Image 1 (cartoon, rainbow, N blue to C red):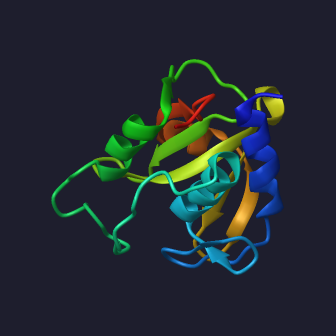
Image 2 (cartoon, rainbow, N blue to C red; image 1 turned 90 degrees about the horizontal axis):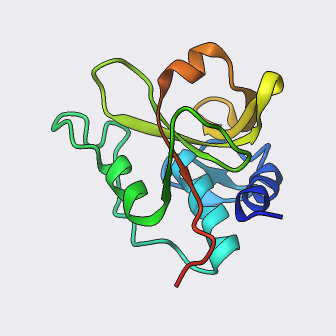
Length: 147
């Protein structure tokens, strides 16, 4: 089993966790970054890096792609044209805004799906429909090993 497939198994255990801004605790609360942080902790044993407090509109006024830069520091870039179970998806929710939503691709092909923490819904597994696909700006994979 790949580390990405392991990540999907872990993420699916978080389904039903309520949405809580800045939280990262399965069953208690999580946002999209918190979900990925929780998967990372279970895979590698520790936080990927210290995450400073952030507001709901963090980095938007400055147009700073903080989440994208952090993903490039810790994850393995993957081509947008391919898809694999376990891909970490980075979304731009609105044209002209920074990319600030994350999910973990759980199925590929015609039944493509992803697990993510979504405001007012909590951690859910959603179809990777065309409207979601159009928002993907980057794909990453978990590293096979982490020091």
